[in-house]
Image (cartoon, rainbow, N blue to C red; front, top):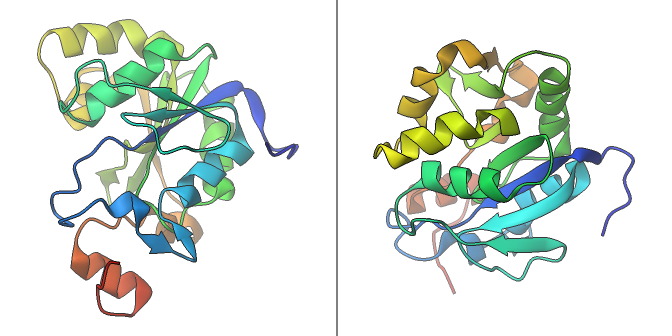
Length: 201
């Protein structure tokens, strides 16, 4: 386990890794990016930034990460986020998608500092005016709102956030950090990122 001074003990990091990778056609999180499985890159950012770490949806064997099952398997990222927030014992949760090959702890620290210094219940980055809720900070105080929404059948994170918009800091991302929001969803994304044909082993 890292002993970096940047790690914040009041934070739980939640790696969201339960998706089906349907658009990629195979389990993308175990594909190699930068010489390691894709999921290890965002996992390392969470290790460096958060005092506690969860892998949500399945067990990828990550060192220092506890495995948290989805409360409603297959129901999407809002349920995964809710599952993590239910289990977290810290005031803040950082939710991070497992398919972000360019993310590092500098981006997490930027979001965490905004969250800790403000009065909102979540900090959700905006890239080109689009919300990025799978690389965002959520307060434990948001849990009752999220529980009610999930119990009422809501499954879209974006739709949920709009219902509590006054509690959310929608924070435009500085240009120097925008490249970290890359997601690899399709073979074409992988080819653009690696510069090589998509040839999974």
